[in-house]
Image (cartoon, rainbow, N blue to C red; front, side, top):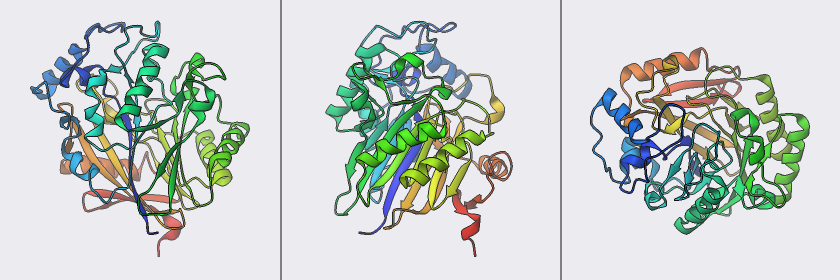
Amino acid sequence: MGSLRLFLCGDVMTGRGIDQALPHPLPPRIYEPYIRNSIDYLRLAESVNGNIPSPVDYSYIWGDALELIRDPSINFRLINLETSITHNENYWKYKGINYRMNPENIPCLTVAGISCCSLANNHVLDWGYEGLEETLSVLDKAGISHTGAGCNLASAQTPALFHIKNKEKRILVFGVGSQTSGIPFEWAAEKDRAGINMVFNLSEESADLLANLIKEKKDSGDIVIISIHWGSNWGYEINPLYRQFAHDLIDKTGATVIHGHSSHHPRGVEIYKGSLILYGCGDFINDYEGISDFEEFRSDLTFMYLIDIGESGHLNSCRMIPFKMQKFRLNHVQEEDIEWLQRLYRSANHIEGTEVVLKEKSFLVQSVSNQG
């Protein structure tokens, strides 16, 4: 059967300023407290780093990362899509921030060969239930699987199922959203209401409920990925509740990867019982360039995660390849950026029992206990 290679990343936010740079921008009117025109985010980025040649082609935003993402050795590509894809004009009032991308710009996802989008996050319903319905339809027509949101609770809880060609393996991705990431309570899917697959706390009881759902869907030999939107936007500290919740899910389901996201910058990573926990992948693509706040976290730096899984279903290796978001595209990092990331994973982002070490301008995640 051989091993599998996966590409994972954090939040992909192709709405607002990014949408304005793409070939088919929506009307730029937005409803934020301070900015009312999404073109302003494009202009703000240009004021810092220079002209963005809009309209850009669909591959532009992936920049220097695209060749690696499209590498044919990769069997599966998973992102957290943090935007609504819709023409709908009925935004979710009083929320403050509302992301949407024109459905005609969907080639910006297909050009990267994205296999699956996790949708259980705090932006997928920014343009209401009609916006969610169109988002699901657009992804379906583009041949991109999705999980974590649906027309009712049953569909929101349904995993994305992916059969690996020429291999006797299936990948199941379960999208889950936690209120700790700012998801409105009323976005939770119900039996007869659209929404997202929510966990309302990170208790053992919640882990049991989620584990029971996963075990109902999982067959022997399946690779399980739990993609969870949780936690605050900023800060390196990982609350012990998050670690315990992740450990419980691995203990109860045998999940191979906990794909955590919500933080705007990368957080720590852990290998636990042969499984990988990404506590916060960081934003991969966004329009925050030029916004002055929280500069100490270097949210312009991000990682793509290349994960190799062995026949046993356990982690063989995880490489973290760094990129820098500039001019709304992913660029190769400079030597000083690599040194900054090295210091980060030796200090604030270090988790006992797991090391992140530099290997040929990328970072290798390894278990301390497995070292010779």
